[in-house]
Length: 226
Ligand SMILES: [Zn+2]
Figure 1: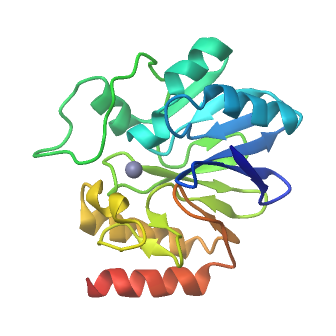
Figure 2 (figure 1 turned 90 degrees about the vertical axis):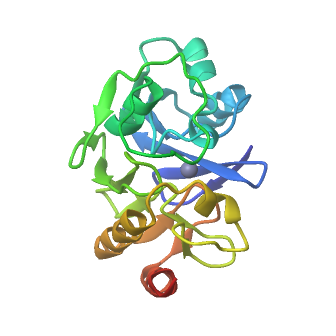
């Protein structure tokens, strides 16, 4: 697990140069945003310990397998006292409900863990504000750190080489577009995130982008052009 300090409150945890999770510092310890792939639980717990805190809650941007992959193992090791928060629609998909018409792309592995809390737009998770960003998945959410406007945007954007919206094929990371459910909604969500004027853009796949306004504008322009 490669760890990178992004802001005084956020540490990026990268697994296999492929997928990120984030430790977000709060007064009582950490919120872990996403869990990366299976078999990462011990490494995530160790990363929190070496950053001098404990994981108090696990907040998920969406239900895809490379983000919820270690959720069950974390719950098994950390116990029920650690709150699990998941966007409502993605939680209902994991519960077996049909919430959208047609095929749902991306991987939706079977989860034992039922979320304690369903996330909706405007909710607060410690210092993070929940922003509804549907499109990549039906319930996808992003998290804005209200202390400094760092934005954890999940899979609305990728940032390999440059920022790209996941509504269209991008050769540096084609998996994200292949897993995207509704391309038009995804682009709308990208615009909504840009309008938040984030100080730094953090994503599921790729490095952090500081002062990301122009990179997000360019990504949205390319995405809108198809
Ligand atoms: Zn995804």
